[in-house]
Image 1: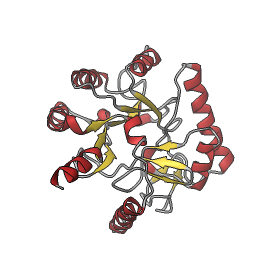
Image 2 (image 1 turned 90 degrees about the vertical axis):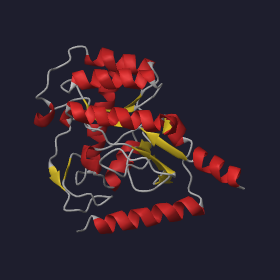
Image 3 (image 1 turned 90 degrees about the horizontal axis):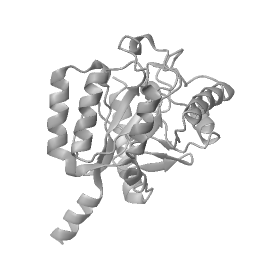
Length: 253
């Protein structure tokens, strides 16, 4: 019985390393250090790439003129390249009416279906031009509405790296891999993704992340492994519902 429980927990516990705000202008020295760390432990992270970065906060670092060549090299390593919005410019206020009740401003929430479809499609065309296949998406600032989901599906993107829960789930014909915390946390059960913003890191932040990888590399999984765990059975759905209700309540205050 004990061996069964250990095996079950092992097979249903994992961390997907998600890096946000990958763009031409970013903290490239720290990104290179992360790349070496990932290679050392054979980690296949998911990179949220901003295809047409116009966010002033993300334009302050040195520009990499070989950005798309670098993205293709990471893709060849089997790293997952994900669409992280289009321009990363927020132009709508959510008033906490976004799908996950995160609040704050958004690049997508509140826009018409046609506008959201257009932004996603324009981003997709950039990736296609650079010979990068896109299977997943996560919106800047975690903010979505039902138009976002419809626009994604009609652009043939059916995986979102966001949402509440301890296990990946399917909703609105889209797979969701939950992202719960603002820092790296290893849970004793469940599959979640990290949220890493290298552009705001200092050297000490990298050292803490390196130690996290050393301590937890056996739990780190790839995007494909996470998607295989999508399950809407009663047990997982009940846990995910409880997590979602609890976190939404907390975020009201």
